[in-house]
Image (cartoon, rainbow, N blue to C red):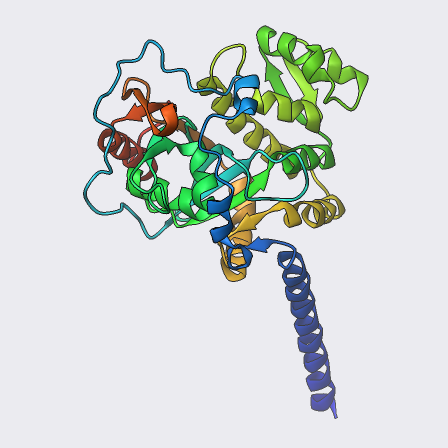
Amino acid sequence: MKGKTVFKVILLVVLLLLLAVLSVVAYITAKLDLIQFADEVDNSAYQETLVLEQTDEEEEEGLAIDIEGLEQVETLPVIPEGEIWEEEDVLNILVLGTDERTKELNVNARSDAMILVSINKKDNTVKLVSLERGMGVPILDGQYEGNYDILTHIFRYGGADLVTRTVREVLKVDVDYYVRFNFYAVKQIVDMVGGIDMELTAAEASRLNGSDISKNATTDDQKTLVEGMNHLDGGVTLAFARLRSIDSDWRRIERQRKVIIAMVDALKDSTLTELNDLVTEALPMVQTNLTKLEIAELMLYAPKFLSASFDQMTIPKQGTYGGATGLHGQGMFAPDYELNSQILHDFLYGTEGED
């Protein structure tokens, strides 16, 4: 009789554990179903929405590529020869921030923020590599194949798949995966985590207090930013991440990395309820070619990476590029891709530190 009672208790415990596991699996599956996966995207639509020439919007926002003062390169940079570098314990994911101002993702967009996130699962380290949007790259597919345009425009020729393939080929780095979100998502996420802490220079604070940018603020205190530490809401965070008028596009991409790190810091203090709300709101604004199983695996590593330090750099490195003209007179940076691929390899798989 006693043996039967013990057996029943063990059986009950096993059943409860099984139910708990199934509940967790059901929860994760339901959340992952909110993501837009790559097999749901029609890449053929991109060829119908090409905007080849510099847009009026780029002119108005000061996003034109400034190649004055650079040595003009007559021969455009070619794709380096050799194998793609890879290591078993390193996962490289290209994070793309596209320039839509609405909740929906669409094909008529630019990948204005491009950051290679390199995760070392053995060492539990994370490295962030910003890719300068003005790099001149060959168009690898479609009716304009063989011509050159800036990297940010490649999205309009073939979406995230083509941008990822281009980065992989010109830099010889093992990157097959991408995660795409838009500017609207950044604003929403920052507001949902209660804002982020950011140290501003006097010039940054002054510019963000300008009338044309402070209109993004949701509260009055966001319109009186000061030199030093500030707490930014989503609208001002977005303005900070896009700010380049006071210095350069190179500084702009450094600000983008600062925003990512600040968002990670803010997430550490979120409650389970807040995280649930955040995931429910944010995932529909995410597109990726990672599978559900691969995402679930990454979730297991997430707690370790949230406390990791972030080494950072920008490609191309200063002094490794000239100026050139591409398709339809587009000004662009012309990097030495063989040299930059070696620099990137040393940073991701070697011992190189922050630039």
